[in-house]
Length: 292
Length: 269
Image 1 (cartoon, rainbow over the protein chains, first blue to last red):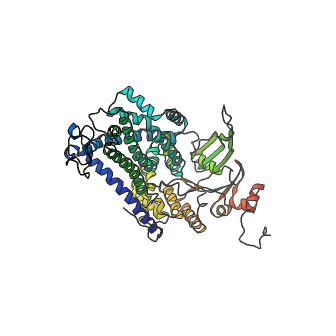
Image 2 (spheres, rainbow over the protein chains, first blue to last red):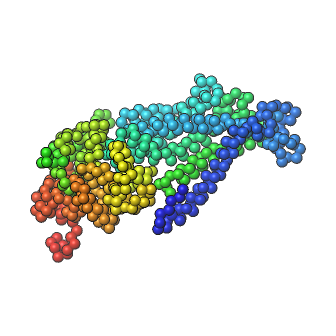
């Protein structure tokens, strides 16, 4: 909903910039919508059973290579499973991890960051020290250790991501909340007699929300990567559930004979992670009234 | 008690921890900002608080309005001791004292529209006719009611400062603290905001404390002047007396620093 200021000529120049940002939003949003649809409709749109093995039709090349069999659009892996169907089913795991782990991480990390940055004092000292200690652990090792303790599974992956990455939100949002807390509109709310907890939620939170949204979409991309890394080292979900990371791990072995088994899930992963980060930046630019 | 001043301050002290001098182990030394101030602000007075930078005038303002906690002394508002009241106990008093801030950009929440900015404190205190009061406040400060739906970044500096004033007067307070409210504005906006303030003081019967480093602004607006130097009051008298017969050397220094409009007057070399 654009608002125009009568007599303000500068707005014309800004409008041009916004259209370019819009393209970024559309492209990344489009890809994410496609992945989301694929994940939701996987049972109906995947051309083959993602788990059906057929050793006779193993390592079939993608559709444009002449001597391939029809029906396997992106080829098959060494066990004869359809690569496209596995990518479509793998989107489910990727998106569940992205949304659940991303949202949980953002909520927990932002809440702690807001409290530390606005209330300062002992709460800040406690949370900041905790963040410092936490960040001294090597993250991937930490995740592998956690999953070894919790046992592999979707829940464990989500817990591992939240436990590792909340510090990212806590640190950034703490700094933002400190900046905002020093602004006079906060003092003004205090002069009006607003309770401090409400100042934090009603005055400061809306002003750090664009940062939270941008970080959240970045975090969703990171979650997808972490899930892929854990699948790659065989610590993710059981092998009967196709995941992009698992496919990449399997494809690596036969990359010289059948490159498509590795490359297609890699492209899906790459585009999804890129789209998440671009989508967040686009949203931030678009919905921050201060930047308009 | 009609003779009771609206605000009575006795031996007010404020000190802050000086973190730059903090030793590695142990407490930071205290930095004395206000060194035992005593003064009254009578009802209906417009008191100018002047001083150079670092004189403690903004600290004094923020302590009066209880954004800062005093380390010693007492502040009485309408006879009631508010020196160490906590936020909950202060809440009923908050309605009666308001503040207008120096920087009109940072004092307005950039994510709220004008109507929300003015209505926020009204709703907080459970006042009725919120929407009508917002309109009245906008009328008072001479802004069109259509501005209700604007965001602060869609306003000019002078307009923003008027919103800050509208927010303060919408609460119908008895006391308003204005902290350097024209120093960020250009000269013509300054004049407009000062005219507005002058009229509002007259129309609404406000008691005003006006913090400024600009004596010519003070001379025009204020009935009394208080001069601060390094956390101490060096002069506190009626405006005419301060300008005609300054008692303290520091006041004379400040007066000499005013640029004179008339080249034939003294001090023009």
